Image 1 (cartoon, rainbow, N blue to C red):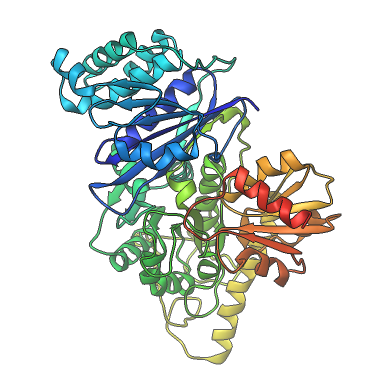
Image 2 (cartoon, one colour):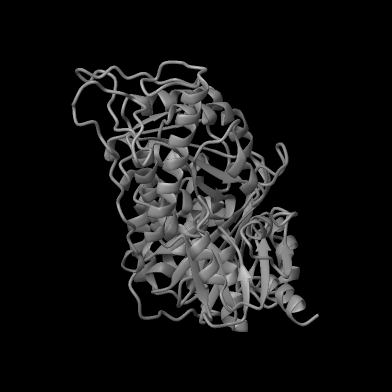
Length: 552
């Protein structure tokens, strides 16, 4: 695989994410597939921020240990990262980097003064200097600025051009044959998928790493025809969302572990009242506040079992932006068909990572339509049916009295404590789960990748799959990735594991939550490779650890 990696670093408030996104677009227009990982502390200003941009001639979804270019906006970036990439090419801000033995420096202040440009254009100076060092044709640089930085494009192009003309080409990056692709963060892909699934309202209290989903949908609310609401806390979020869904609006909420804790009583309400709601939970490092801006996979068990009592739920964990898009749409459709709470379980790596998305490679999933009331009176909100799915009507419909009840109730929604009716309604909800499990046989609930006939396999889930893919390609392994966790796809999972003699579970948690779940379904991992420091696996690190397990 032909690849190149660039690290752009500075302090919070320097626009590191935007600078990384512009570097990614340069690679995108050179024909590369791109992945961006961002690293930042839980601070508004100050602290060290960096963006890692990896470009390759085939799709990638993880950053690697190797860095080819180090773009340093300050001395701290050089001090922290240069010891780990002694062979990288350095492009540094001469105003703040005072200790550099080799590489190029450019004075942002000098160029801004010469061009009478505002300080906000300073990063464009560094992008111009990097582009010249990498030998990227100016036509591509100028085009990227015009397309992706339309505000004050002329000012930014002017300072970037000056830095470009004053610099030297020291480590050219060749263009490759390939068109530019859409670059989407995981949260943007989730948002677009929800919209494709018919989203009408998104209600959320900002909580990293789900916050950018709120920002994205709010910024495009008019374009998508959405209501986007930011209530005062997570309890208000879930209750407002349930009311929205009861009124007939396809509604989703977004949060992370701490916020979801506050939503669990509302979740149980949705289970008893059979209210369709989509909940996006993006994991970060816990417990409690933990590491608010770092990643983890420690909430699988929580999402599977949250809430009091027993009720069906759909839980899906995509691995990259493409899966996030297709499965978010499917989750919305299925939640409404089966009138259940449904989850998109993500993590910081997926939510805030940026991926090249090739729409031609995406496989569409079936569209599940809701069962609507045919108007034949009397209307019974919880009418028992062979599949357990009660036809839907919404408040205000003529001849339909719609009762939603969090208590045990009869088919009309009237509170009851009668043993026979409680049993009937419980079995009704169980029938829905059985029917959903049957329908999901038509969906790719378990992804099998890598060397399909290999007897050694990596068992993984979520964003970790991307690093597993690369390790499997190097070592000739199979990759087994459950996408759906509830109801668990036993048949597909058993088929995926057929012929495996050595199963290694790879997870970003301390207890092997997927490994334990697999064991409940008759498949035991022979070993686990776990990481729980808040940072994602890189393919290089994971490769070393897997080899230690395979050949101790």
